[in-house]
Image 1: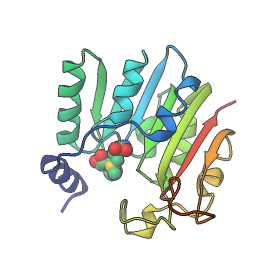
Image 2: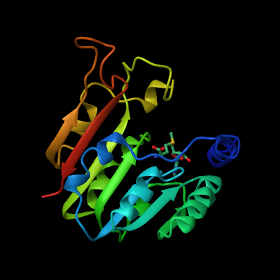
Image 3: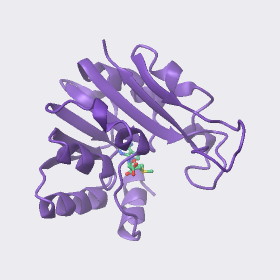
Length: 189
Ligand SMILES: C[S@@+](CC[C@H](N)C(=O)[O-])C[C@H]1O[C@@H](n2cnc3c(N)ncnc32)[C@H](O)[C@@H]1O
């Protein structure tokens, strides 16, 4: 099955709700009050809706037309403007693009890291949150290719200035905290 069909089927048959990533919601004070924002591999666009509500000119890119149609319905009924793009994201997708904010949650394609950083304006912020290889729950991909190694976001985006990082790993009381994902914010300086 093609990648697009796979994701379309997931979104057609699911009752998932659109929620913003913790790294974005808990650090919203860092967002500029105006400018261009991108929710990359947005799915139902929990991040895009949050960014548009914050007043940013927002785009959501994803391979799934079904997810984007649901996002368009939600943004229209909320009176928000979000520009959607159905695309299989490659480094070329970022050509001639410049964003003040890029958010990536629960999506990992390492080959896109240079293009993501290249598409940030000077001073622009990258919010990234996705699953780690030593996650504790069944949530997230089982294929280790789509899971972060320890501290990997710090390496992938080491050309950015670090603003925030959290990876609790398996230290201490495992019943407390998000043990499944790494959270990163970096700024292009
Ligand atoms: C686990 S979902 C995460 C969606 C959203 N970012 C979130 O946090 O809820 C992964 C998303 O990546 C999209 N996706 C997967 N491969 C893609 C590709 N090559 N190009 C564009 N989108 C892709 C899927 O359609 C899906 O919406």
